[in-house]
Image 1: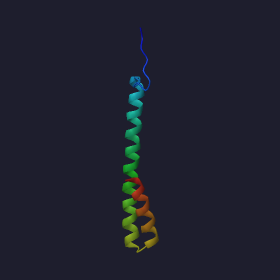
Image 2: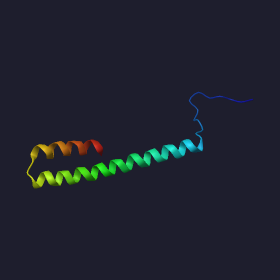
Image 3: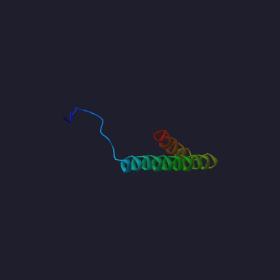
Length: 65
């Protein structure tokens, strides 16, 4: 007789696991790319002495980490 449990872990299909891993990898790559962009923009704002851009970019960077 087959038993069913409340809140039992469900088996994921192999393609579903691959899809989730690919999605996580892509999200991490996008996040790393954006962090690198923000760091470059922060450096530029410091060279330009642009306090407003610096503050905005550092806030954005805080939300990524």
